[in-house]
Length: 420
Image (cartoon, rainbow, N blue to C red; front, top):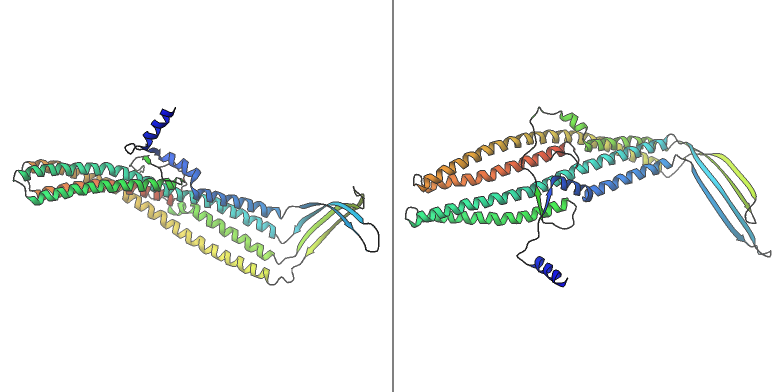
C-alpha cells in the first residue's frame, strides 16, 4: 500500500506529467451553470422573497386569531397574603372594509411576484449570453492553437526553402531575415495563444459558477445553425421579451400601490370578538366573552398618508417612463441583433471563399518560387495573405457564433434554450 501511495505522489508531482483536461459540451455547461451560477441563485432568492411577500400581504385580509394564558400575583400593603389570578382566552379580528386597500396591496404583491418571475427569466438569458461567449472564447482559443501550429509549419517550411536558396546564392539576405522574423512571429503567436487558453478556461470556470479555475476543454462546432428567413416581427418579439414583461408588471404593481395609498384616507372597519376564563384558581372557571365593531378614522398622522400618496404617484410615473424606455430599447436591440447575425453568417461564406483562393494561390506560388519563376517579394505577399485568410476565416466563424448568441439573448431566450 505504501508503494502505491508513493507511486501516485510521484505521478502527480512530476513536472513532466500534466493533469488531464475536463472535456465539456455546451449541454454540460448549461446544466452546471443552471445549478451553480451566482446570478441565477440570486434571482431565485429574489423570486422566493416575492412569493413570501405576497403571502405576507394576503395575511392582512384574513382573520387574525390569537390565544393568551396568564397567571399573576398581587399583594396590597394593608392586607395579608397575596391574590392569585389565572386566565386564558381567545381573540379574533377580521377586516371588513378598508376602501379595498388590502385587495390592492395583494394585487400589487401579485404583480411584484410576476415581475420577479420575468426578472429570473431575464437573468437566465443574460447568463446564457455570457456563458455562451465564454464557451466560444475557449473554443476559439482551441481552434487557434491548431491554426497557429499550421502557420508555424508554413513559416518553418518557407525558412527552410529560403535558407537553401540563400546558401545557393540565388536569394538575398533580406529574404532570409524576413523568413526568420516570420517564424519568430509564428512562435510568439503560439505562446500567446497558450496564455489565452488559460485565461479562457478561467473565464468559463467563472461562468459555470466554479470558485477556482479548471483545466477545461470544450467540444463544440464552429458552424451556426441558422437558416435565412424573412425578417421576423420585431415588435411581437419585443412584446414577449421577459425584460419588458418585468417592467410591465412593475407598472401594474405601481397602479395598485397608488390605489392603496389613496385608500389610506378611507375609514377602516374591523370586527372583533373574544372569549376568556379567569379566576383566582386554576383552572379558571369564570367565563366572559365580547364582540363588536371598530371603525378607525385617520384624522392626523403628521402628514404620513399624504407623503405616502406622493411617493406612490412618483413610483407610478417612474414605472410608466421605465416601461416606455425599455419597450423602445428592446425592439431596437432585437432588430440590431438580427441584422448583425445576417451579416455575420454572410461573412463566413465570403471568408471561406477568400481562404480557398489563398490556399490555391499559395500552393501555386510555392512551386513557382521553388522554380525561380517569381521573386521573393511576390511570393511572401501571397504567403502572408494565406496566413491572414486562415485567421480571418476563424474570426468570421467566431463572430457568427457570438452574433447568434446575441440574437438569442436579444429575443429573451433563457439558459435552457435548445439551440446552441
